[in-house]
Length: 330
Ligand SMILES: NC(=O)c1ccc[n+]([C@@H]2O[C@H](COP(=O)([O-])OP(=O)(O)OC[C@H]3O[C@@H](n4cnc5c(N)ncnc54)[C@H](O)[C@@H]3O)[C@@H](O)[C@H]2O)c1
Image (cartoon, rainbow, N blue to C red; front, top):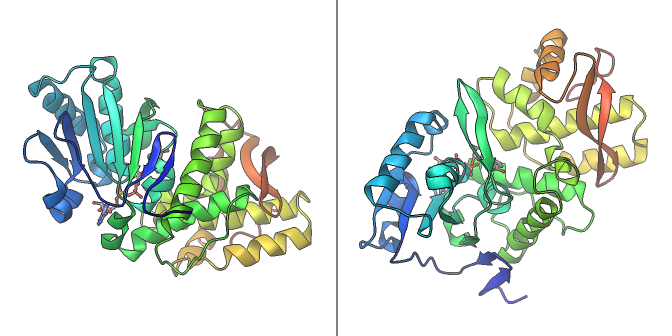
């Protein structure tokens, strides 16, 4: 495959970053600071800090103020440059300003290139609940510039690899990953981005097949919130996939052979020290309470994505109890 320019419909891999001279830009302040020379001087730019606290109604107000001040119309293009946090936040602002303006995304982290910028989900946090206010508003074009990844910390790069690993484990069509925390080739970034895009197109409102993308997420959310976000999302997803695998084994949903193959792959991911002990220190009752608080779940039944074979998952309704949960991350 020619790596100089890769395309798939509205997804483009661009070898050089070319930002437009018209419309307005909303950018991650850190990305703007590093890549300032690439930003045009002729159009308005709103810089926002990519911190979870800023994914808020307050920052949303700043976005509306910026768009109003620059007289942005529905037919104008808003260009958003940043990782998943800025893409989520700005896209929600753009989706709701005058009932929606034109949106182009330039994801700057691996996670946003293969996941957050794709599929149209956008949101802000509300009353400490992550992504509580949001909608679906797919960008008309997504420009992936892999060179952005050279300035990303290895910690952040790993979070993207974690979501790629999840995709690899729910589809046997994807090429194998190098989990050594090096930057994946552009062709593979596009392959994984296209995979997510196609899954989202087949189920735009997350009512069926797209839910497979939640593999590992039930327990990832519990680990993230109970650790007060000490552990990062991708790392928690990998831990969550191991916990889900152990639940599948306990319930007899997966053969020992398939489970071993899955575990061998998951163990190649460099999970940060301490996450396993942290999960082990959680109280079963708290875990059960947290799963039943999930909107999709009644008090008794938890709806979650479980592996049923190597690189195959299904949404299952299961009754969790201390026996089913006993393996933890072991
Ligand atoms: N909409 C979706 O479908 C979806 C899916 C997954 C995650 N998300 C959301 O994505 C967010 C996490 O996004 P993320 O993992 O991309 O991280 P992020 O946007 O929070 O960025 C992480 C850090 O990297 C910095 N950064 C970004 N690009 C950089 C670059 N090229 N060089 C150097 N530093 C850079 C940022 O300033 C920040 O400090 C969460 O808010 C999550 O809810 C959304």
